[in-house]
Image (cartoon, rainbow, N blue to C red):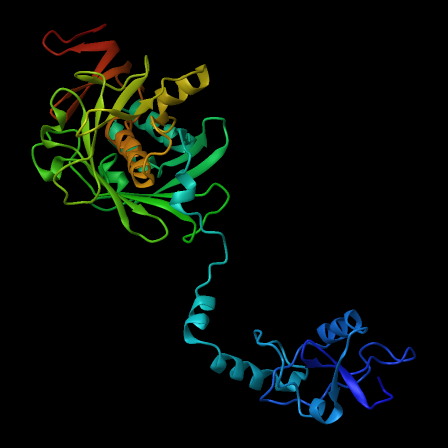
Amino acid sequence: NQDNGTIPVVQGVAVVDPPSSSSPPNAYEPPPYQPNHIYYPQQQQQEQYYANAHAPVQQTMEHAHFGYPHAPEQPLQQPYCSHHQQQYTKQQQQTQPYYNQQQQQHQPQQYQPQIQTALAETKRLIIKQRFEPIEALAYATANAINMSVLGNLGEIANKYDVFTDDGGDKFRVIEQSEYLGLTGRCCCNPNHQLQLHVYAPDVFSNTSEVMVFDRPCKCGQCCSCCNICRQEMIAYDGNSENQIGYIKQPFLGGGLTPALQVMERQGDDEPYATIQSDAICCIAGLCCDHTFVVKDARTGDRIGTIVKLKPDSVGQFSQEIVSDSADVFSIEFQNKDLDINKKATLFGALHLIDYMFFENEGQGTVDLVNQQVSYKLCDLYCCGCVVPCKCDCGRRENNHHNEGGYY
């Protein structure tokens, strides 16, 4: 269009004729910088020109000289001249709305899984606690010298791998707790204060939490007659930190059967679900599965089940004998369309049950000093009190007659 003295404008943007074949593509000069107008990168300008060369819009040279006032509204792009970089950036920040700037500053760098999508369509989950060899070695050494209390020095924060029913990765659960202190796991395990952070399996960061479970320190394994002895846990949505559920041990712990109450929020008087063991006066042990039934508190209908699975191999049986960090659980919901917050709260109740009944130093101990071997058969339960039932064999001292023997 050089005959009529005009240059083409593509979509309201005036462009300059492309360079001749004898010069490189970037050899021609861009139009002068105008601070009050919007410019587009040189490469984008050339692409638009070549793509629309057959249908140009006529515009005078005088109009092109004073910039492109009719350019479509788009986010500001980087200007042509490098020496205008600082001035242009300042102008861009001033023209953008404040809320857009704040959104860009706080925009997460990674995908944030939501609890609604994480537990939607979930029917059954398998939870496997990671085996900690150092912890098992610490307990075995302490028991060998008849100082089992020193085994807590090797106590490591629990970690769980959560899988779907078909074996796919679902979550990673990591305990965060103090090692020392009056409420730390070294002194108060397994009743210490802790938080359980639930993450997506491929992302570990503070912005990828799906759920958070908070449990205060309690005087466990004793009569549940006051608040300081009644176990509890609060469930939060990991992204918004909104409380989505609350679990608490009832008064006297359900009597002869271990029980928990599930409520929507802390402070509610009426639970919407109850969790109760199938067994009476007996809990733990490796000989069978231990089932906890979740029922609707109003209708009595079954909502789901939580099961502590017995070892299914010799290797897993050996790990559970020497350590408390090889437990395997399953949770199943009767209806996969159950409310998401209720699913998350029951998932937290599973971990509370683990800390209440299955976090001992191991089912078997060997005392080399006294030449004794002990194996825990089960725990006897009554009104919140947990008393281990053990089978001991080995050397026995007779203090009255100063004689020894074996039993």
